[in-house]
Every structure is written in C-alpha cells, then in structure tokens.
Image 1 (cartoon, rainbow, N blue to C red):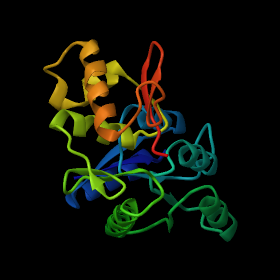
Image 2 (image 1 turned 180 degrees about the horizontal axis):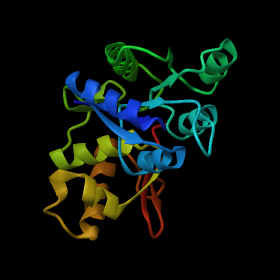
Image 3 (image 1 turned 45 degrees about the vertical axis):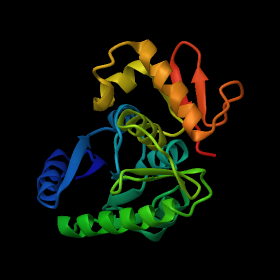
Length: 223
C-alpha cells in the first residue's frame, strides 16, 4: 500500500481525504501543523508528501523548500486553494512535483500520486545515484548489479536509502526493521552494518556510503 504524509490544517478536509484515499489503497498519515509534519518525516518513511500552502507557523512554500532539500527523492504534491501563478511557479521552484488546486475529487489526487510514483520508479533505475531500490521486486542494485543481501540486510539498506541524508540511530533501526527485532542488541546492528559495507563495496576505513556518526548511529549517502 502507498503511504503518504499529508500536512493540512483543515482537520475535516484532511480526514475526508484520508478516508477516500484509503479506499484507493493509499494510507494517509495526517499532520495538522508544519512542525508536526517535519517531525513525522524524521521518524517515518513515506512514498510522497501532500502539502497545503496556507498553514500556521510556517508557510507551505517554505516547508516545500525544507523538505525538498532534506529529502530530494520524496515526491511533493501541493494541494491548495492558493492557485495563482506566482504560488505555482514558486512551488515548482522549491521542489514540488505537482500542484492540485482545491477543491478536487480525491480520486484525482490518487491518480496523480500513482503517476508520480510510477515516474519515480522508472527514474530510480537510471539516475546518477550509485544505488537504486525496486521495492516491487525486492531488489537493491549498485549500478546495474543486484546486491546479494539477506532479508535483514535488504530491509536496513532500503530503510536507509529512503532516509538518505538523515542520521539514523541504532535504536531507530531496531524499532523499524521487523526482520531484525529478534536481534535485540544494539551491538548486533554494528555487526550487520559491517556485513552490508562488505557487500556494497564500502571501505570500512574510509566509508563512502555508510557513514558512522559517533554516539548516534549511521547516515547513508547515495552519491
């Protein structure tokens, strides 16, 4: 099922969209303030972000810029009653992939989400990034070569690819990767990371892809 984050301060509208999108097999996590939305993005993985512009605390265009800089691979659809050309242009300049003026049929949002995600799946196979993720086939490639990973190794690398650029703690990995919950020791994460580094061709003395962050955990760089 597709999983998206929606930052929308109109609670009634957000809940209506959430119910309608669920019928389209799209799980929608709601955030009613920008700060709640940014927090959710740090602690969970989403396939896309649906973003209102007229928000309390921080304007949606600024949120668009912040999210795009932090997670450039995350598709962003702006959903707003502010539909003048200036907002549209600025939204695209700040990283939005689509602009959907309110009001609209929830099914249109579902169609646009699927179209963007299909496009992104195709691009993942040919971008300049070293690693690409194909979730449907449960495959991670380095260039054109498929990596030979165990289930736990695949789940960890897939998780880190989706949160590229963010520092991920060992505790976060244990909590979010179901296939390694039986390995309850934080030290076991370091052991698995060592195996992953070997399989992806990362020099542990001078790592290029999996960077250790002292006292915290790891950060993945898909350069």
